[in-house]
Image (cartoon, rainbow, N blue to C red; front, side, top):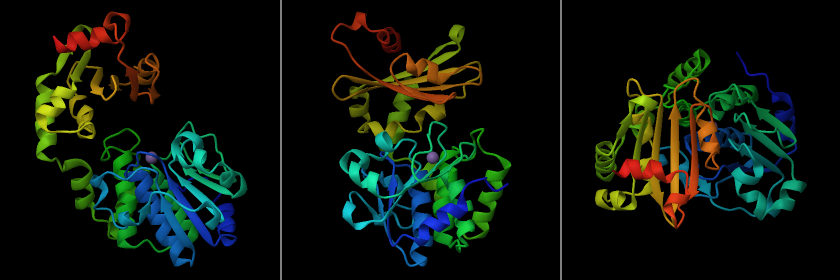
Length: 325
Ligand SMILES: [Mn+2]
């Protein structure tokens, strides 16, 4: 099944473009990075001048991705005649560059390539497919529509995108179509073992120490089908780890038989409390996250809250106190 998207309008728009800026979302992941880099190669082979930007420096977890060193962190808005946003559900919140260069976004056509259900199809042309597991899946069809050759490096970039957004093909968005595309990318030379290692298996010693410490603090409440962990700044210090080292931990915990909701709470700078929630079918994680000003998807959501000076006045502290007990 080829996603029903305005490929022809996109291709037509490209014929009017010489200098293109591709924009990834803040806190970039393998989907926005891999999809951008694969499209970039195809556009460059058409003779376009392309700059790929992201406001945040990608985590070193992505250093293995071919072309990652070509990601830049700012651009000159007078130098481009086309904008392509990749995996950005919202131009204002997710690109970060919108506030900096608002008139550039008014003046220059935007092509919006995304799969978030909340994407309102901003831009002149929207290649938006909420049914796609990742932008990598959309980009595979875009490259085919362009008639672009997918090189082994591009195949690795796209496989990384697909692999990441499906949680290594474990999430329910892993359709047979996703697996067929992954198989094709493998045939085209994607380095599947490198993708799996760098995105899911590689763990530094501080990460392993932190996760071990965290597992020791795991609390279970079978009456409420609830599992939770609270990680303090002191825990991070004890493991020699950083906040980002918690990434992926909730996926490890959420799978205990009899547990339907898993919550990971972590203390952040400036009295911030960050919460990640995972749920089983039928329990809306975003509903719980919204109670603390957050949001997300049905089975995965999150929130940030400010720790108040009077602990008893906050709704979430009882959870923290129980967790610490
Ligand atoms: Mn994505």
